[in-house]
Length: 184
Image (cartoon, rainbow, N blue to C red; front, side, top):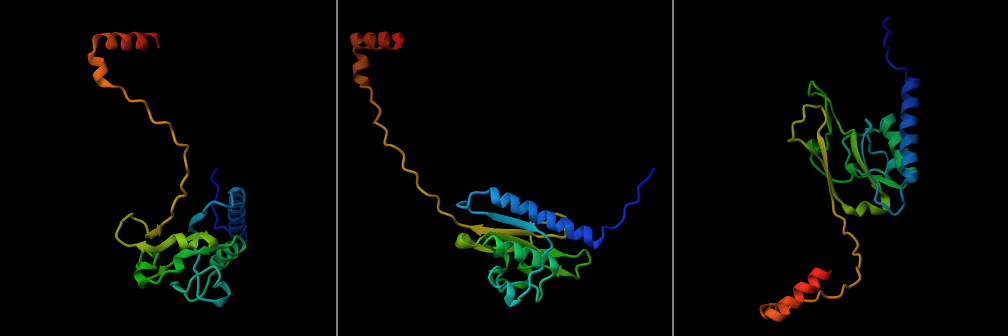
């Protein structure tokens, strides 16, 4: 017996999106607050230039208005003190596009990089890469992140004893060395 597959309803899609953000929130809650959290997302979120979302998005977005997925992403990032870094750097339009329709007529910026707001200084640049051909409508998104690692001081070890090689040329010393080595 065949089961007919139907297009999911709007309610099912919204439930799936809410479940996704709930799962993501669960993972964030389990992560130590001292860690740098970087989220690479393909959530079909078009972020606009509305003043409402200025705390979590930058002004260099491809779109003028935020779609529903963008609203969900902005709410999530704001609630977790995070920032969408992919809209914070000024680039030419072609380096903002992360998705291009198969007919090459519709371009969108829907893939984003999100980071803790207090750690956003480690991100030096985010842009799409148009060169690599991966046979998808999406372009790779590249982020340049520079983070200095903290120095961990190790206890100073005692310097190793060096062997006097000249003593090994003396036959009596060589015999004594061999017997010590044999006993160990």
